[in-house]
Image (cartoon, rainbow, N blue to C red):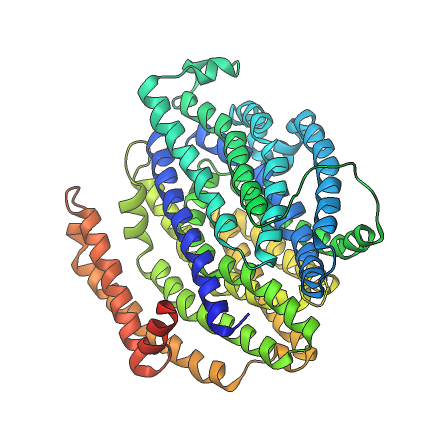
Length: 528
């Protein structure tokens, strides 16, 4: 893949991810307005996080990190890559069907493991009911992730990147239609509608989760068929290739498990503070926008490209791809991190404060957002550094690094929560992310030229930091001046849009002047 095509692929995936995140904002604005940070909101968020946690563990994490390099190399060598993908899909189908059934039966244990603070109140029973409805999503989305890996490895990124958009569309339609038609979703699940405000909406959202999974799977399956990959189910068979896939995936699965344990620690700490799971979730949605647009796009495109280059012996091309991916990642996420810290309160207030989401919820969510923002560059750089290991089929080293980051998170989140409250969970997550980046960077230095930062990257990074600092100062001053407008119902959206637009303009102007990100170069890349 040429550098221009590589950048084009980043922008394709990033563009669709941006659309998904925007619709995710619409979804969360609706959830915040109808459910606030109350018991139904927290129960649904925990229930939805369970299949998502295991999805990252099985599919998007361990499995794809092992599957994509193996599939890419077979595709590059002209071997029977489709048969290998079908065997992998058959194995995943059997494994996850059994796991889904087990999870549904053991849902009370899973909810306890996720949020033991729920045990003493009504949130627990709600989370169990919602979790049993939502849990089959893991099977559907894991199959979709495998097929997406096939598409990405073959250089087709649109359908896989667009699939998450459909999930958010389903959620939004369910909320709007459900409120309009007053559908009896709670009664369908055997729940007393009068027991909690917003129970009907929470029940509809739980039912929408597996529906969204079916729609996502259908899209990528259709795209794979159009691309010539006939991924039909068949009886599983333990081939030598599948055995090797399992051997490579096992350490990655353990590493993925450690990453999910990091998230689990945060949720456990938050579950003992009323409303904290919702506050952390809404903050997470905001910082996930730049993380998804940049970090996920880089990770999705870079891994198969590095795998093909390493197989072809193109060390120089691999180094260039890694450096440009890292450069564009930081050029876009460092200013985003500064903005999330400086204008956290206006962002949360304008986007979420309405209905059941009040000023106290805004203050708590904004605090969490600022802490997450400080970790944003670390979360994104992980997406650039990890492919250096996975492209070499080295999944063991990231596992050991993930264990170290887990220890950092546990000590900080659990140790500080009695002193500073729920925000210890966010601080632990951010510091653990930085610890992981430092370890990945140090470990990559022994991989040779392909893993080394080049002169251009080292020259531009301080200029990017300087431009982001200039933008942060302007945003801080402008937010103070515009404070009355940002709190006026008729003007708040326009005021926030103006604040963000000025921040973007100032950053790109400063980055152009300092040479951190020349506008002509960016325009040329976007045009191509």
